[in-house]
Length: 90
Image (cartoon, rainbow, N blue to C red; front, side, top):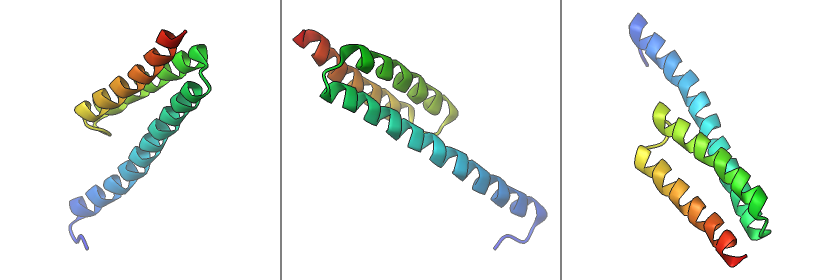
């Protein structure tokens, strides 16, 4: 347990950031699932819109350090490949 005033403050800050970061990661998962659902339904327009939202969220999360830059890039790449397969199938 932290004893110093500054260590106690850091502990409080870390707890707050943990909550915010968990929420952001949860949002990323939700947006990824929405893209997957649109791909499964073969709805190209909906998939493209969902992909745009997911890309924006991943880029923001990477910029804020919530997810690693390479992790975000890999996720976006995989999602865009799935969406492009729908467009190619048309």
